[in-house]
Image (tube, rainbow over all chains, first blue to last red; front, side, top):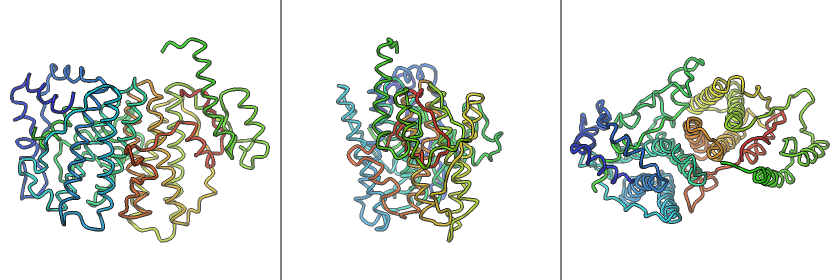
Length: 261
Length: 240
């Protein structure tokens, strides 16, 4: 099940899904002062048990690969567009984004190849709107906006792969490949965050001007039943030391606003 | 998986084969392998090994199954934490405040990982391992940061390679939560060494054609870490 199929599945049980989940109306509507800082925008809590069942049924390996492929399509097109936008990325930072772009393109190709090997059909590339309906109108003319969305996509990518690794436990080859992509996204995320003068790691659920949904749950300090703070660490360190996953519906709420069809 | 005895035997033989070829090439032969034949060779190799474990350094057995893999991760986190504790307590000359902040954060993350594994493993945890950092010049920026790069990249490749060896989804998720933080570290350290270049996710670690990071088996990782570990590490019962 790819992201778009998830959309349609949700629509079946909740006709208002687009209004509730679309970042245009929800996550991204609280722009203040023309900046990127979002007011607290709750992740939609509409997802009921019927949807959870739909997600649970989506755990076949090709569906997970197509979920990943859709996110990689988004990243791939985002960086290609950014690199093609004249004057956007400073000359002395281009090497960084050329490397990311190269990897996202490779991920798209790799995932398509694996899907082909599984005799599965790769999802079609969606049509993207990186302005999210005009909310990020200057994404390809303002470097800071571009950086902010880059961070959003990389950190979300890391969380998305992490959220589905467990479903691949029975398939060693695909699981390992997914982990190998996951850590590359984390390398990207760290670099882009540092370009924004943020730490390379995520402290608490600090959204650094991005929609709060991207970092929801990153303030968790309990791991495998053990409280990291009670081991003598500050909550800052305890949260930085462990990255948290996102479930597909959370990823959808974040990425969906950039997908036109 | 319902392995017959024969299949299990084949797997063991396969494992021996996998570890034996790097073993033969290796400078260090103190790791204990899967069979008496391997052990005999290892012991023979140890005779003329200057870095053979001291008589009073106890052996460490990682154990088997998921617990073995968690102990393997615990060992690597012990290594990283001990290294960064030295880095922060004996800063290299010319260290910047930004570098101090990054290295202090990383130290604390690695300590938190280490202490988490100790707590999670409880009575199944291996003992604290002893390390030998004599090859590192802690006063020299390049020596410290290049070692940090080696350890972070090694950690990433270790977790990436170990994921498939786990059977428990909770443990897999925990490994996933940690490995991306190690990758964030690796990226930052690499950028300190070669700022604003492509090295933060360089072609030496990310395969160009596929965009995949490295994934290494426990035996490969332990061989690479060996020069810094004083104890004899027994890993023959780890899943493979």
